[in-house]
Image (cartoon, rainbow, N blue to C red; front, side, top):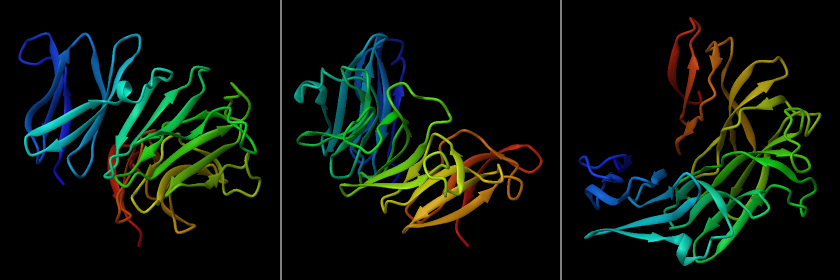
Length: 274
C-alpha cells in the first residue's frame, strides 16, 4: 500500500525530533516534539494510520494514535484519554484497520501483559495469570497483523522461572479466541519440537510462522495454517542456519526470513509453499 512512517532524531538542526510520513494523508513531518524524548515503535497500517510511543530515559510519556484525514493527521495521546498511568514499560504498539491498538506493558506488580485498546482496555494475556491451568512466567514480544490478529511465544512457570528448560508455547489470539498452536517437548512430550525462537509472525488469516528446533536438533521454518504444519526450510537442506530475526508473513503465505546460505553467506530469503 506504499504507506511509510519513520522517526527523525533531529529536525533541520533544531532541538526537536519527529515523525516523517509518506502516505495518502501527508508527505512530510506529521509530528514533532523536543528531542529530549524519543519516539519509538512506529507502526503504520495499510490504511495510512499509525501508532507510536514516546519515551524518555525514565518512563513512557505517551501511547499515541495518529488517524489520517484529508487535512493531515489527528494525533491522540491515549495514555491521557484512558488513564493508563498504572501501566509502564510500553512496547510494540500496533494499530489495526479497525482502530484497535495492541501493545505490551508492565503492570504495577511488574508482570508484563498484552493489551488491546479501542473504546476500552482489554488484557489478552499476562505473566503470572493464575486463571490459567499453568501461568506464564514470561511473555515474549507479540506479533500483530493488519486485522488485529495476535501471536506470541509464552514460557510457562511460576514468577521468575525463566530458564530455557521451562515449557514454551506458541499462542495465537484471533477473533477473541486464544489458541495454543505449538508446544515444545517440555510442554507436551509428544511434540515435534525441542524449542522455539522467540519471535513469530502472523497474518490477517491467523496463520502463524515460527522457527523451531526439531527432534534431530535442526531448526526449521514452520507455517501453522488451518490446524496443519508446513515446513518451509530446514537447516542443512535449503540453508545452513537461521538467524535470530523475526520472520515476516503475508496473507498469501509468503515468508521472508534471514539465514545463512549453504556457503555460510548471510542472505534474506522469501519462501512459499509448493
